[in-house]
Amino acid sequence: MSLHPKAQLAFDAANATFATVTNKPDAKIQLTSSVRTVSKQFELYIGYLRFKYFGASKPFAPANRPGTSNHEYGLAVDIKLGQSNEEEARQALTANGWVLHKNPNDPWHYDCSGIKEWGEIQAQIKKVRDTASQDFVVLFDPYLKSEQELNEGWPDRQAMLSALNAAQRTYSELVQREKTMKGQEIKLERNIVQAQDKLAKETERCRKFKVERVEGYEYTLCPNRNPLPQCTGDEHLPFRNRYLKERKRREDRLRLWEQKIQRGKQVLERDKQQLEDLRKSLAQLAVKLPPAKADFDSKKRAYNAKLETFKGDVEKVEDFESKQNDRIAGLQKVVDATIALW
View (spheres, rainbow, N blue to C red):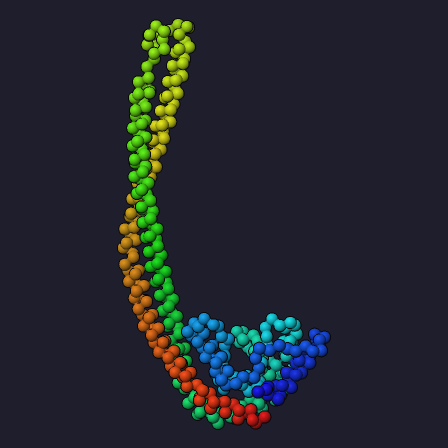
C-alpha cells in the first residue's frame, strides 16, 4: 500500500524542500508510520482504549476508530520525533500542504489537508463511508456500546478509586501511628524500669557514703587524740588542714552525687509523664481505628463491585476482538473501494 497519489506528490515535495534547506541532497524526512491497514488501525485503537480505560502497562498513543483514520486512506504520516533536523522537517511538511494534528498528545501526526484537492478527496471518502454506513454500524455497534459504557462509568470509577485510596491512606496512617506509639510505649516502660532500678541502687550507695564516709568521718589525726575543736596550736594545723581538705572533698562528692540522683528523678518523672500522655493518645487512637477500617472496607467492597461491572465491559471488548478478523475484512473492503476510486 502507498500514499494517496496527491499525498505522495506533497510528501515528495516536502522531501525535496527538506533536502534543500538542510543542504543534504539525499536527506529524507524520517517516518514511523504512513499507510495502515484496517487491521493495524484496529490493533492501535484497541491498544489505546485499553491503556486509556483499563490502565494497561504498555502506553498507546491516541488512535481513531478503524475506517476513520486518514492513515488508512494514505493521507497521513507520523514523523519520527528527535530525528536530525526535526524542525526543518516540520517546516518542509508545512510548506507543502501537510498540517500538524491539533491534538497536543499527537505531536507526530500530519495529514495533507493543506493541498487543494483535500476537499474533493474527503468527499470521495465520505461518499463511500455513507454508502457503507449501515455495515459500519453493524460492524462496530457492539464495541461502541462498550466504549460508551466505559466512558460513562469511568468518572465514577475514578472517583471511587480516589475515595478508596484516601480511606486506605487514612486507615494505614492510623495503623502505622499506633504501631509507632506502641513501640514508644514499650521503650518508655523499659526505660522507666531500668531508671527506677538504677536510681534505687545509686540512692542506696549515696546514703551509705553519706553515713559512713561523710557523717562517720571523724578526726583522728591529733597527736594528743583530741577531737577537732580541741585540736589547737600551730603544730596541729597541718593535721587539721589535711582533715578539713579530705572532708570537703567527700562533701563535694556527696553533693554532686545527690545532684545526679535529683536529675535522675526528674528524668524519671518526665518519662512517666510521657508514658501517661502516650497512653492517652493510644486510647484516643483506639477509638478512631474501627470506623476508619470500616470506612476503608466499605469503599473497597463498593469499588470491587464497580470493578466487576468494568470487567464485564472488558469481556465484551475481548469477545469483539475474538471475532475481529471477519469484521475487519469487511471494513477493509470499504476502505479498498474508496482507494480504488483513485
